[in-house]
Length: 432
Image 1 (spheres, rainbow, N blue to C red):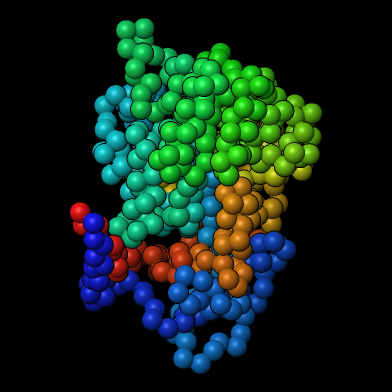
Image 2 (tube, one colour):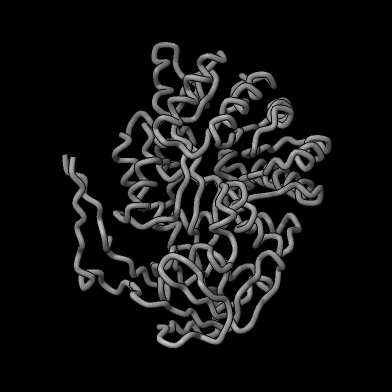
C-alpha cells in the first residue's frame, strides 16, 4: 500500500484566503468569553492553524485583514447536532424513521455535507453530532471535513446510538429490523458491551445511549455499567433522557451529559452541579415549538414555556450548560445553520445573561468535548477558530446571528458574508 500526496494548484482555490505567512485580523474589539469583557482593539495574529498573538503591535511581514468595526470572538459550538438527518415535515410528519426507510446512508451523507457547510457559514466552527446518521455516516463526514474534501465544522460523532428494543421508533411487529441502522439494540449488559465496542472500533468519539423512550428505561445499574465501560476506554457518555426516572438513573450513574432532560427536579439539578454533569438542553425557540405539537398554537406555547422554565431553573441552580439545538428537519428557505441560530432566543427568554450565553456557546461545549486546550477561547496556542460580528454580543446577542467572517483553523471560509472556500489544497490519496 502506498500513499501519494497530491498538491492542487493554489490558483484553483477561487477567492480562498490561504496564508503562507502570519496573518493579523484587525477589528474594533474582541471578546474575552471567560471574563465576559470586550477587549480593544481587536487584534489576533494567526500562523497556520494556531493563534500566536493577541493584541498589538502587529509584527512586521504580517498580512493584515482589516475587519473594520466588527468584533471578534471564538467560533461558536453546537453540542447536539444531527447532520445526516433532514426530515421533511410534509412527508414525515415528525416520524423520522421514514427517513431511515426511504434514504440511504450515502444520500444522507450528501445532505450532511450541505448541513455542515451551512453550520460553518453561520459561525459554528465545532459540533458534536449525536447520531441518527445511518451506518456511521457521521464518522465519514467528520473524516471528509478533517481531510479537506468538504467544508464544515470540526466534528465529533457517536456512530450508532445504543438503545433498548425499538430505539426511539414504534417499530411494527412484522418489521422490527426497521430500527436498523439508526440504533444498536441492547437489552443486556453483554449487548451493551458489544455495542460500545463496535462503536469504538469504528472510531466514535463518544457513546450515546437512550436511557428512556417509549416506556423502556435503562436502570441505574445499566447506565453505570455503560459509564464504567466507556470511561475505561477513555471517552464519555451522552445520555438521552426525557423523564424524571431516566434523568435520576443517568445522574446517579454519573454520565457526562444529559441531552434534553426536560423533566428535572431541584434535587436532580443539585446533583448535576455536584457531579459536574453538563446539560445540553436542546431548548427549542417559540418559532420551532409547533413542530413538536402538531402546530396546535396553545399546546406549542405550553411546551415552550415548560422548556424555558426548566432552562431557567437549571441556569439559576448553577448547572453547566452547553449549547445544543438538535435541529433535525429541513424547512424550505432555511438552512441548518439559520435554524440553529433561532435557538439562541430560548436563552434570552430564560434570563441567561449575554456573557453567560457566550460561554454556553464556546467554553462550556469545548470542555464537554474535551477540546478545552484547543478551542473555546481566543488564546495563544489554540486553534484559530474565529468569527467576526457587526456589533458587541455582550450588548446585543442578536449579532450572533450575523457573523459575516468565519475562520476555522486559520483558513477563511466566509468573508464579507460570502462563502470563499473552494477546494482542498492538499489531499492525501490512498492507493492500494
